[in-house]
Length: 173
Image 1 (tube, rainbow, N blue to C red):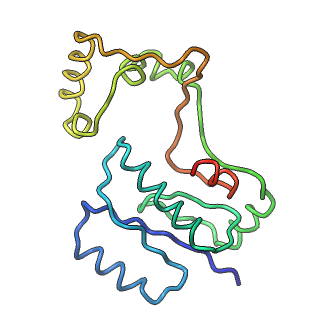
Image 2: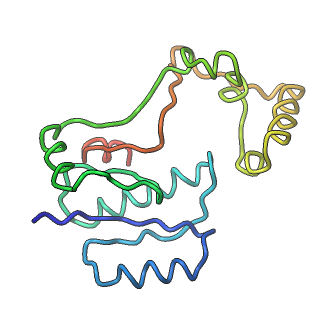
Image 3: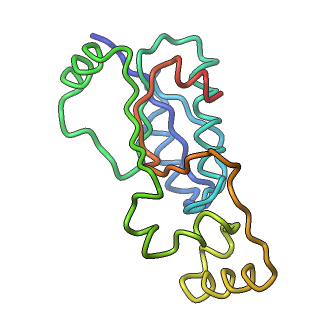
């Protein structure tokens, strides 16, 4: 029976007592690695940093793996792991990641396309809700803080959740 490696990142903003309970429950499991805690915020680069740190831990662990899947704490596979393993074996060279062209996405065409792609959005603004984001957007507009992507660069968006091969992971790192 194959043993899957699980790397857990527990947000530093979460309750320390809950973290202690989780680590105590997982301490006996040899397939669980805990990534150092760091504070993560919605739509913030801290999520990328925590993910990169976990990928580095996996890469440095010396364990062999065919795919790595990023899930949130509320996600849970609904199929038995042997089904998932069989599917990934059939798709051994395939990366699963959702992307879409921002120019074709209705929300970006009719909504905040320019604001989302042309202005900077630090997490302290996003945490404060729609009124703060509107003020931040107007402030950048009046100060002419617009930034355009380099010519020929296609802007895409997609889900934060994915399943990647070792070659894709190493490319990211």
